[in-house]
Image (cartoon, rainbow over all chains, first blue to last red; front, side, top):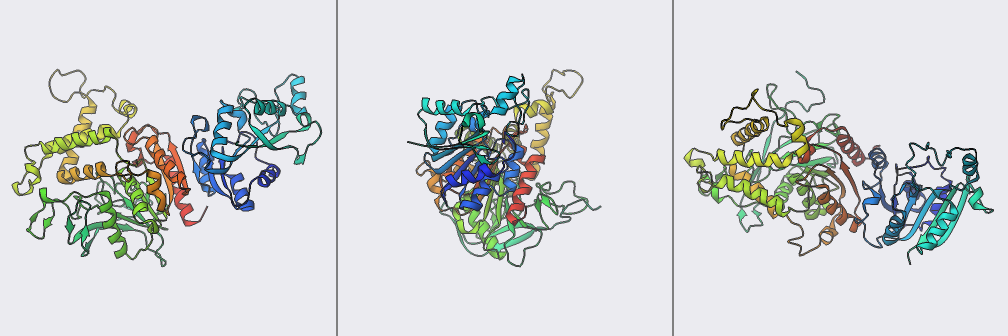
Length: 199
Length: 377
């Protein structure tokens, strides 16, 4: 369920920095398993992918991923509490129906949670809206009528969301074109990466 | 006539095991015979063997034909053959008729060496654990110390699970299709109706019908008809038969009126002519008794602790006999133990029987997994 375009891999390297070596990782919406294989190579992780889409699922299987076909939103009860070191939701959250429940489930299953999403507040998106159009970009490749992205948010929105539901943010990184963004991230950042921890 | 990607003309073989087999029931079988077939070649390292376990009405004849005039090939011919998903150019595939079967292996209609008469009613109840022990003797006989895979659908899938529990060091991959960790009350209920149909047939004679020259065909055909209903989904039955009638108008008599009726009657008759009723009863018993948790005395996850195999689990959305939910119980217990597992839920209309279909996605998954077992992409 890769909702945005394939990764630049730069966000992969940030995720890899946040994932402890030899840890056990669950990648929700793992697509063809590219990220998991990257983490296997860089951090010697073990783990599983979860993928709903049958074509992605088959690609993941072919890429040697142990992949479970499940709809994240119909429940993750197959996964025991605290059974993973890290649970990742990469560029998928914006297509979730019940965002809060999904994050809570991730925090139940994993000690650490990594969430990445395209920042809807990115200036190029704002500009397109000002010009009267729904934004499309590398991170948001869909037209308004065929997008699976039903819950797009800005960095500020996500911060407020975490505060509201008391999700503890332990790390955050904002990226544009493979570069880290420090100034006015909600305007200049295209992709947001968050690390949350279960309390 | 050369069929494309077929294993061609095949011949079954017999293996006589002289090692006594202690059954779960306490009975000791001093020796037994298993009928089996193999396809492809066992490689020099003896590490390319895949054992295919059969379901309730199956047997060892998986692929190919016995002669060119044979009407039907083996029951899983769509899957097994050169360049087919389970590629016999690469794998050495073994099909075995289970102990207690009616296709050559020692079973109720075999001659008991002690009495020189057919076993009939005295043939012991065989459990899935017993099957695995007997299949293990065959595997040893073939010079295989570790199976590359054990594969099965339905009751065959349960055997694949049990293999990985019973001989953890001997199973590299378990491919479990349309199976369940045990039977539900509803499953057992269907089995009991099937058994009652057979044992109340006046020809059954408590299972000793061979000497009378009769068979409880009436009971067996009803058992099979009932089974068939549960293997199909309501939807697929509707699509296939709907309310279609045999004649142009209702006959208003007791003959078969609807096409579904003649289909079931045909299937029942066909089966009753080729299958042994005593075997059918015992196969359903083996299903009923199967329960690695031993009546919930142990959690499935703790039963799976010693497993060393990797798993592929497949279920079908319209299968109400062994629903996806039951497959997910197996998946969960494997995940609890951090055992490598992939799980696919295939959208299919045909119900439990979908595991025998050659649906593209289904076969692609199997093909890809078998390739993965060989270490090629």
